[in-house]
Amino acid sequence: MWSIGDAFVRHSGTSYSGVSTHGTCGHLKSSRPVICYGLQGEGRAHAVRALSMARRLSDDYEVHLFSYDQGYDFLEKAGYPHLHRIEGMRFVVDRSGRVDVVASLWKAVKFLSTMTPALEALGTQLRDLNAVGVLTDFEPTLPRAGKRLGLPVVSIDTQHKFNHCTSPTWLPVWLRLHWLMAGCVVNFWVPPVDHTIISSFQHRTLSVHTPDTTVTNVFFRDSFRGHEPKDDGFVLVYGKQKMAGELVRALRHLKCPVKAYGFSTPKEAPFQACPISSEGFIYDLSRCRAVIVNAGNQAPGEARYFGKRVLMIPELGQQEQDINGWAAWYEGGGEVCSLKMLTPKVVDSFLERAKQAPKRHMLNGLDTAVDVVRRHIH
Image 1 (tube, rainbow, N blue to C red):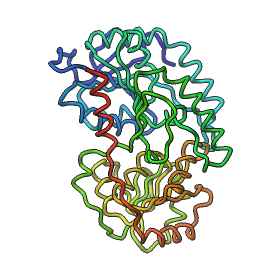
Image 2 (image 1 turned 45 degrees about the horizontal axis):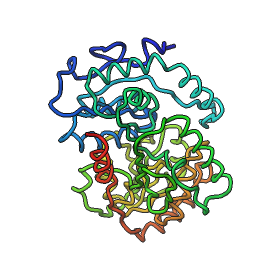
Image 3 (image 1 turned 90 degrees about the vertical axis):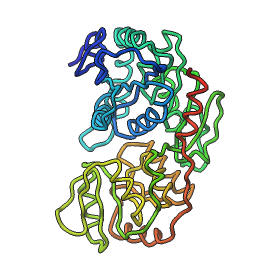
């Protein structure tokens, strides 16, 4: 069990009052203004977005990234030079794989109520780095530390749509209620900031009701520009290991190849297991016939960039993913199916419709976000 006071921020290198850095060698003072960027560590989507942002800002700023778990591991593997490991809250999951909402909320309350020593340690780090501003991607501690020091803080995530945008009328009632409750959770988790950037594949249909808010598309890495969409006849599937059994059963009858990312598959046709690779995934995404993914925010937006029809499989107990699935259906070019209802017949029907490619959506939310940050942090 970690101790908030001395182990909230952990590290494999030189430490500053319990806050640690990776690859900074004690940190020589930068000739560029320093931005500190905290990001949620569960899943890779936050890390992908933050890495794209940090690289784009690197001409004008030295960006230090703070994360944990999968987010930290992804950034470390990417070789990002200014990386700091922090301790973060993990969702509570029951035996069925469903997120336990009540237990997770109680854990969040305890997490936030005991973080004062951690904020002091992060404040020391911000001062040592001579930071001029803070970015946060649904990470609660760094923006609080930044606000204590009077630094400008900008939020960049998709979750703030729940408290900055009106719940869509086309959602079923139970998901509209979840939208309102999620908005309360976001207000509790992330403190008020100077400006909020909402990055969402459903940016065209979100209705903002708060000031100092920018809504834009998901972020596309620069390498997207090097690929043009083609149809090489295979299906691209991205899922978690816990989804492997159902995915394999629904796909093993296909005559076309199935390229699988994120979960293990039988070593037989039609499956081809692919190692997690950012560039490899982008290449396959540009050349597949259709995409089957869990119902996150990033992958559906990336599929739309190349004009690929997407079948979204919400994870059990993840109402945010249920909302994403409905949004993909409402906006066109996407479909949604629960993992339990995914059958060979459903897959065949989806692939038949995928022969008609949807319209491409190539607006890069990264460009918009960089402009906003440059206006607010300097």
